[in-house]
Image 1 (tube, rainbow over the protein chains, first blue to last red):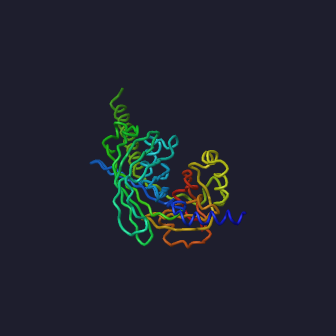
Image 2 (image 1 turned 90 degrees about the vertical axis):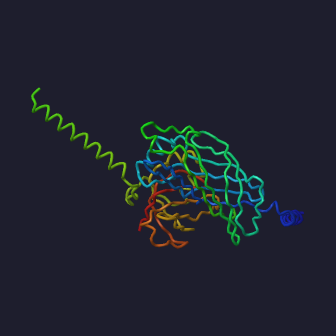
Image 3 (image 1 turned 90 degrees about the horizontal axis):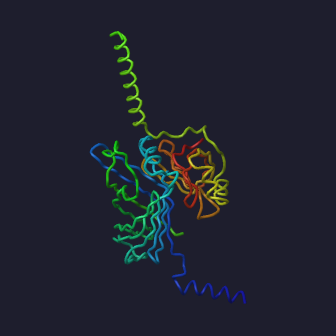
Length: 182
Length: 139
């Protein structure tokens, strides 16, 4: 009886491709942000970003630890964590969403331009966002990238008046990841 | 108050103000420096660290967040990214492992997969594994 049960499970897995593992992921994706003002440019990088994509549904999640953003200058990093992002209270930024109209053929090489829509949760605030993204498939290797703008104000990030000229009202975010099967 | 006293107070005030401004300027320009390899709060293996996060992520996060850890483990992947490199350590559980960024001067030589290494780094939390930053390789 057990043999029959195992045989049935194996057959189902082969016949129904949707039951196969379809998730791809990375733990070392990258997020960079750039704030440009006439006073100064501030940029930071986080190379330990988790990204999981379900290739069947196009659903995805990106997660990053706020304290993993590294700056060139120590004081900027300290202000970013303590004054603006309050990273002890809000340690993660999480995007949960999906490719709108998922037309990516994950088995055929190409650079697919897609739209990704979902919710970005950061600093205790959640906003709906929709961003353009590129998914590139080359000989089975899958990578993705996107550049978009966010406004700190939309996430209740207060910028003190004294440094308002140093921090842009719109911050450019770039995300990228090379993914492998989970 | 005599003219001499006023001049002295003025001179001291200016010196203090200039000194404070210089200190602020210097501090604002200080770069994030690599961690010294002999100063850390906890020492353990990657598996021991993961076991603590598996037991209770909340408790482990409270214990290790922002703390400097001396960690030893086996390199699974080593990836150069500009001025930094990212090391992923091997783990018995593929969905949970330790990863660590190390500064460039420590990563000028590529680490081979399978190498047993020790790093001193700052823990920034947990995301599908423990995340360590600003690491320094220990010989």
